[in-house]
Length: 348
Image (tube, rainbow, N blue to C red):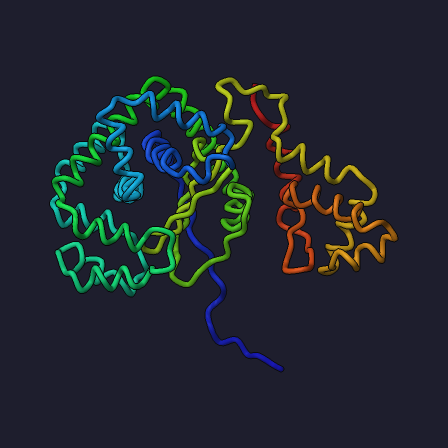
């Protein structure tokens, strides 16, 4: 079939960056109230119990409220509203928002076609609140969250948010605020420095560990570093914007960087490539997608051995599965020389 393309050329998104200990606080509340995920995080489950028990009792009550109604989402939505210099400016803005503005910023973005319903629901339309709930019946918590936001007294919601954010921040962020800020700014600066070397899609993949191709309605991607949710990348949506709260890189977690300490991603990649059979597999997968059985047949090795090699390549993000077949992540391979250059050029 012959195709004559008379459309415009494929475009990508604009890439922006933000970082703040305020995001770290809101995400900390989110993860502390999400018990089911604790075993998958870098800190053990008992770490989160100790964080909760360290809070003043009045704040613990607000954390329980947040756990029941997922109002950590409200905090993040408000942080998307505008940049905030510090906790005081955030608390002031939240205090001054009208009831309609507070509800609107609390409600999740569910697509441009539902923005009018979002506005109407914020103004008190029960029919539009039901429409928004119906649009996300399959979501883990959005329907119940929207029902709460559109029915709760806004003064109650406002006071809850102020007490929750200030209490969590003062207990868990303020004592190490300067070091948290430096860590986040260090990682954000590292990613910004690669803008001239990587296109937006490649940079997003490098930061988050997952590819994100352009969507018709998304013109902007916002990258926000976080340490509290490591190793997870958390996604969110706003009008025209996809937001990624991505994990701070290993090399930026420490207060003092050893210029001779290579990034873990670089070590993993070279370890994965430092084997003759795995290099054979990389070349084969560079040519076409192959199944485990096809790789086994060509390499004349035990299937378990081939699977082990694939696991190493996948953990280094050099290979990915596509159904029952495997393919090379060409972008990841091409980025290796840039990452090596960045490591070699790292200042003392």
